[in-house]
Image 1: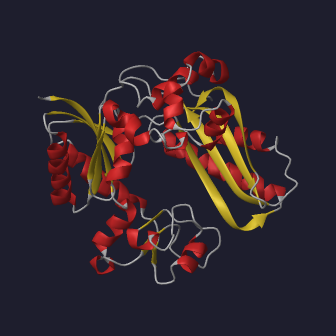
Image 2: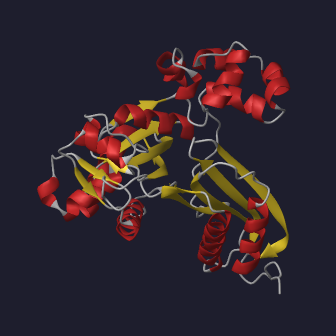
Length: 355
């Protein structure tokens, strides 16, 4: 019987796969992508690693130096954002040639809404189309909800197909930690543990009134819905609109000069503002992130008097936010994040610009 399904498409080792397509001689070798590709330089991290590199313990977010120690034979390559954006666009365009609704969630993943009487066969056909058009492989998770589909992909990788439904959700996920649920991190898990909720099954059986008391009237009951396998939100083809944009930099040598720190924050603010202004967006809030040499990290944020497209005004606010930090330790990382107004509808008047 034909019915609606949600498929989660997740490209396998995406960045590494794109690089291997450009360098076929690297197929089967451990490949690490990140920074400028030089593991001798300080404070650069792994963006992704091929499965061969992962077998040595190399993981995203690991310092390149640590990756080189874990896998001395790895090939290290610099990140190439334009190449990954182009490859992603080809994949998404391929998905849209099928009778589906496509909701992009990043370079390497998308939710797909499809009506079919055989979702596994449909998923395999989708994989074949992507492979033929782009030479990239993907895993596909199938579910009645986005959460089920996303979770099923974890069982499908690499390159396979897996299905989770409301009927099989608790059987498959029930004994796992709540952190196995997409969207529940360590901090929320600790708060749930304080309430005696440790596993997915515990969360599915939890009293929604108690959850509402502990987490609030919206978040609390929503957590229980996650424990039951997710809500009924459908796949939509409305383009994803970012709510924020950020720039950050990790320095090879810690910064101690306040003027130098101030200049870096202003530069980051200008860079990130120019990138969003080019898309017709306005900045409403400015946040500054500071990580010290001891890895202590704090973020502070302020709201602008009115939304602006003026990079100088955003830089001025970023400096004002930075002044609220007690910079008494060497600084390892700086970041600036801007919160964005939603773009105006075509033909509508956007927010006024500051003079």
